[in-house]
Image (cartoon, rainbow, N blue to C red; front, side, top):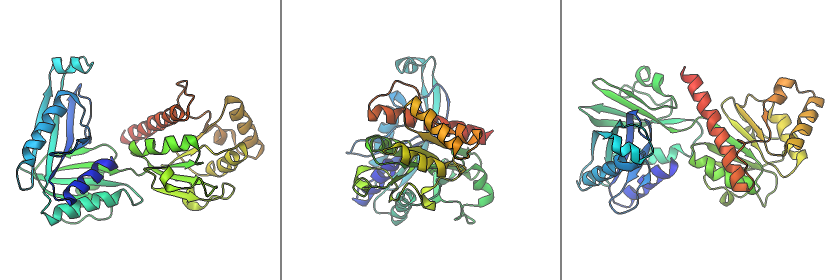
Amino acid sequence: MREIYDALYKEVGCGRAAALVTVMSSSGSVPRGAGAVMAVFERAPTVGTVGGGSIEHRAEERAKQMLRRPANGSSIETYTLTAGDAAGLGMVCGGTASLLFEIFAPADDENISLLRSMAAAFGREGPSWYARKLSGGRVTAARVLTGDNFDENFPEETLAPVMRREAAYMDGEPAWFVARLTERCRAIVYGGGHVSRELVPLLAKCGFRVTVCEDREQFAREEYFPGAEKVLLCGFDALPDKALPGAEDFAVVVTRGHEADFDVLSQVLKTPAVYVGCIGSRKKAQLTRERLLEAGFADGDVARVRSPVGLAIGAETPAEIAVSIAAEMIQTRAAQANGAAQ
């Protein structure tokens, strides 16, 4: 997600117009749901996707047509995926998707300010949303919301109830469209070895706000972990508060050894983290559980540890292990979101 808004900001900052295309709503068999986004440029490659196939092709053509106009603009277009189109994507039947097109012209100071707010959202703690106010099917005002910057133009009583993980469209006059920009939850990765270097950029691309904790200075380097919000140099035996997960955070323990793994787990299990995973063989996992029980942790606490961490896909290489861990974390995050929405 971040690379989409970074690309928008860079393009407009260089004096070239850019288009943001967002799925507002969808039904039937369409590849992406509400909130999916892509950035379209006249010359540079498109960043992001609204599902691929014929809908995305038509959306790109529409966006480039709008980019040829000198001023800002917006529109809502509805596209239908026919049965033939769906068959080409391996689907059974078609569906429809309503897409919001927004053009950001480079000469507009409000555009620059809005895009700067979007870029800044990825560097701050806490979640954020991109809210649009619409009238007559066009965007009349837009703002990055952080939960504490409501006003009469973006009223809390209207918008706060729909500021969730899933995007929300509220019809009316005015109409509102609110989509998550950055996540609330963090993924804290303990250890800076080979698996971590594969895992961190993958998690960042999947929308997690990633913090890396490593106790060796030569491994705690930001350039090793593209996409990470923070890289902390700290001892595993006494983690600082900023290295401990909160109630919506994910903890992944992939340190260089059993002792460090145990040190981290003995602290993380005292937090309300939604997910605790630890790398290792089944034998190591059993030994770690026994040691945690001996240290006074209850059966329920020890049962929270997912070890061996990751989905069982036969992963062997660091890259494959990273995929299995990320998949399990995405699965857990989706289950949490679905539970919260019910």
